[in-house]
Length: 387
Image: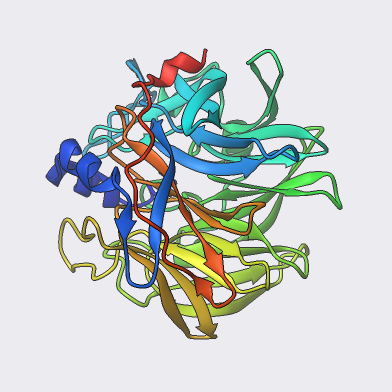
């Protein structure tokens, strides 16, 4: 998840201590929670990330892939490094609950302890599908395929729009993080139809960028001073975007927040008291929702607790209520055209297609309980199958 959530060692430590099978077992079935249930509507996904719906209702999902065998240069130091890259990330669409290839052979990288970066988010602008990819670049073993924003073409290939690997190297932020990775840009992607451009999040460096369709990249705001690790972005009704923060280790409960960033870079705090936020969504009535990847976190490794992730809804400026809990490392969050809330699970440990997209039915008063069910039975799909 990177970013990245790499800016964190959080996954590094978790993957080291937790067996992938345990992650898969806990993330596959429908997850009952207080007041709601997450119903799997898509399965067989390889490290799923962001989702987007086309005007015709087609659901597209970003898959981070599984890395590869090509060593990154220069070699990253342990415990995160070395990195090994390959073209195993992809974009799929969902049919009958299962992934169907749309575009493959996209750059992905795996760290020494199993954290994967690849295709992280999707957006549609003027009817065209785009993807943000942070698995590319020479540091990730994919020198010929930089991190950046890509246009997904009808023939199943991807065309580079903006080379973020090059731009981040040429335009460093004010305060580089201890684990600086210039190729880890491109975690979140939000289309801005008014300007015909994109908001792009770079959690590792701690900045928000604007990417135009001609490839021009402009920094909107540098958030690197406090190394808060900005993660998910969502368009705000009043313009600009809302931004959630993971925060560095040990991810203290209540230390995260959501801010609003205006197009001119003005930052305003809007929601505090959160924990390890990975994504933010805006409900039909304007209410903010967030995914907390882990709660009840510890002061020492592994810091995070498996199966403790939550989706929460804002009630006041500094408070929230649970919508769903007991989730295995929830990553991405979005409202669908049907008014339901959708979440990608898990953030790590889905190399063999254990990932799902879960749905939460939203009623007049918020989340309503839905019957739990096992996810659709889908054939195992290698990340490279989308070639």
